[in-house]
Each structure stands twice: as structure tokens, then as C-alpha cells.
Length: 330
Image (tube, rainbow, N blue to C red; front, top):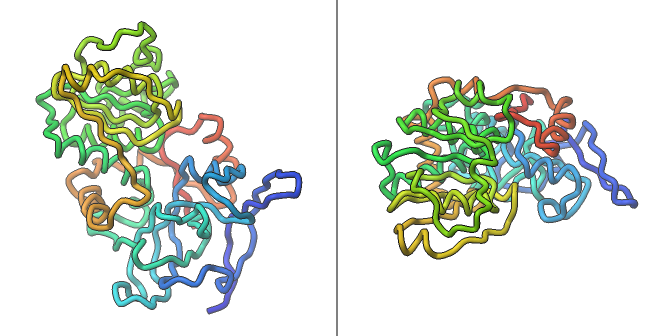
């Protein structure tokens, strides 16, 4: 198959400068994989922003098309698991990192990366979730499997205006939890209350500098997207038998704490990875995202933009000024 399509391309100059442009590519230029998908929607993630400025921990070779998320329709398939016309989702693995990504009208991927769109979700709603929703779902799944319930108390969500945080707040609220949302953006309070947060606290409130190994037992559960001292503070604030799920490092990769929350309060810390999440678990979480965990109004969680608007939105993400999810209509 050979015809052209639009894609965002990041190019690297000899001086290590990175430029973004919308170009025409040919399907024959895509990697030779089992399934060709015509992309309907993508969504923006922090990894896409990092790829767009030359972060070699995300993308090693340029020119490159980022986009770690895509939903769309199978256009051609060499796999018996997928037929032409199937509606599908592709998130994480190597999509948009070193494999040409979803910020384009077509992607070519291995069949083992693909999830069939579950009933209860549209292609647009799938990208309002995207990797962020999958990650938030994996966090919630870990906490629920550990026994967390609304009767046990409040759940703290850090980085609550980001993609994972926004969806975690909305899904926890749907499940009946009292959600405490952490943000450094006072202007986001109305939005966070609208999506289900019961209480809003500033970053300073959960950034303890006292050096004490334990703080007042406050939260039954924590979903942390930032790491660093805010995570350390949250761990010191868990109730007896409480649990935390960590999935991010926006503030820091370091964690300075003691063993006391774990050996005196019986707390548990779960590490969450969505990039290489096994397919059976991945498919199970997508089913929950489409059904019992689906917020009543997903549309308020995201804004929709065109491919041409993506470069400016990536800048906002890098500046920490993005709010909620951004989906891209292809």
C-alpha cells in the first residue's frame, strides 16, 4: 500500500536543535509490522513532549513522529486476531518512542500491542483515557485488590491536574471515594471539584519539611504521579494498613523516607508501569474503563485539538501549564 498522509515530525539539526513540522509521509515509510491502522484520535502525554525536544531517554533517532497513544480502524492486517474495519486501541509499548507514533494519520504496529475497542467506549473516549487512563486504572486496580474501600477513608491524588491525576480523581469519585486532590494551580479548583474532588490542597500542604518519620494518619490510599518529597510525605500520612500506588516522577526520581510507615503501620507501596503491562491485565483494565470505572461525563476531562495545534500544546505541557487531557483528532 502506498499513499501519503499527514504526520507531526520532529527533526534534529546538526546543532542539536529540534523543530516540529506537519509533513506528508508515505505509508511505505512506516515500519513493516502486522497491522496498519488509520488513526482517528490520539492524545498528548508528557513523553510526547519530551520526545519533541530531543530527550534521548524517550526517542533515540530523529526525524521521528511521537504519539504514544492512538485509536482507530484497522486498514490492513496480517494477523488473524484483527480484521479490516476493527476498531482498536494502541497505547504505550514502543509506540511514539522509537516506533512512528500516533500523531499521524496512520500507524503500523505489531498485533501484540493492540487492544480491541471494548463495548461502552467510543474511539474518542478511548483517547480521553489513553495511557493516562490506563495508568490511573492500574493504580486503582492495585489499591482495590489490596482491599481499599470508601469506608476506610480519604484517597490522596497528587499531580491532580495532569492526565493520570485528572482521570484518577474522576474514577475514584465514580467509585464513591472521598478524593483529596493536590495541585499547585489555584485556578484549577473549580475544574477539580467538577470532576469529583471532595477537597483541594496545595502542594505545600503535602510537602513536609519537618524530618519526622511519621505524620498524622490521614489517607487510606494514595495515587502519586510526582515522586520525591511529596510521595515521602504521603507515605508518612497513610492510615494503618493503607496503600499507595506510584506511577510518576514529575517532581523527582528520588525517594527519601524510612521503613517506619511500612513496619509500624503495615503500609504497602505499589509500583505501576503501563508501558509493558501484560496484555491480559491491560485488556481487563480497558474493560473496567469502559464500564464500571467510566466517569459519567468523560468529555469534561479533555479538550480536543487538531494536529496543527499540537506543537503549541506540547510547549504548554513542558511549561507545566496544561490542564486535564488533550486529545488530537486526526
